[in-house]
Length: 115
Length: 115
DNA sequence: TACTAGTAGTCAGCAACACTAAGTACCAAG
DNA sequence: CTTGGTACTTAGTGTTGCTGACTACTAGTA
Image 1 (cartoon, chains in turn brown, red, green, cyan):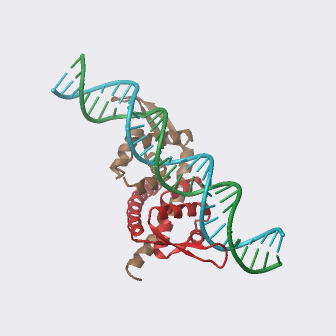
Image 2 (tube, helix red, strand yellow):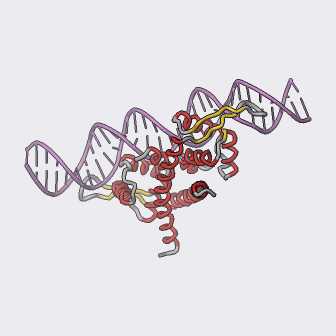
Image 3 (cartoon, rainbow over the protein chains, first blue to last red):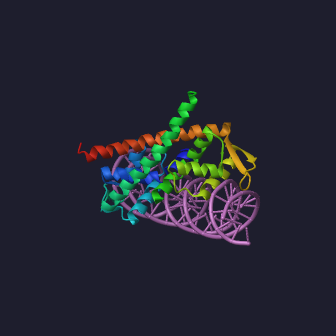
């Protein structure tokens, strides 16, 4: 993964994972797999687990231990009310930032076309 | 500024500043002012200066010292060829990330409408 | 049996980045 | 001569994602 992407993921990866959990509860290994499916092919497993620990400690998610047929028990995370509120804030911040950056991106296209 | 925004800016602020410089050379104080105009009201001055030092050390910008009528001389930064290439990479990374996040955002709206 | 691979999670240490807070330097107005 | 605006610098902090190594359990295979 490019270094730029690594830096860009700081702050956004958390929102991405919370959004995934909002759609459906999941455990760490599963989340990593889903991220890979969605194109985030090089996100390190360790990164996801560390992130899950953080959001759990902040009380944004509830955790349930569920035995697995294969390997150690799974920790299934689900977004709770507090996490929902936090996710809303994330979308606000994201919209704000994305809007301004897209404006710059658009300006670039204008420039390239010589306007 | 919210903590989420602070984290989200990691990696993107650099691209934002490079994009500003691509449009027009500028010096630190000026860049900070422009960022504030564009809605990034709480970006710390120190942050911008530190960022400028970094991109200068990486050779992404050229620097010219220009005397100011008011205060110490200005360091005017302008994007060079290397910086232009780096900015292109930034837009690629941004587009990739924004596309995937918007997909999640959209999914959320669908959910809220009960579809 | 021993080895490999897939599943599932943990931990220690690192690099990069934005922020804070304090400081330097220069000028003009009061 | 002190205040306020301009312009930049520097030291230290916290958060984050990455790397690499590790534990633990199961199933298949040589």
